[in-house]
Image: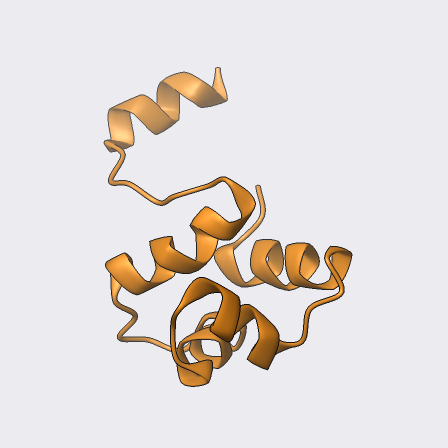
Length: 72
């Protein structure tokens, strides 16, 4: 399973976008993109989802029980 930073970097590079371009296209500050890609803390879930929507994804809470069921 990929981490958010790995996923975002991979998708950004596949689409040949710079961090600045991705920030502009997704409507967030450049610092948000940098924080995500550098695995910095204190990320706003709404801002993260705003970026991830560019690639057809969002983050949502998932119970531990559901994760365990997915593993089997």
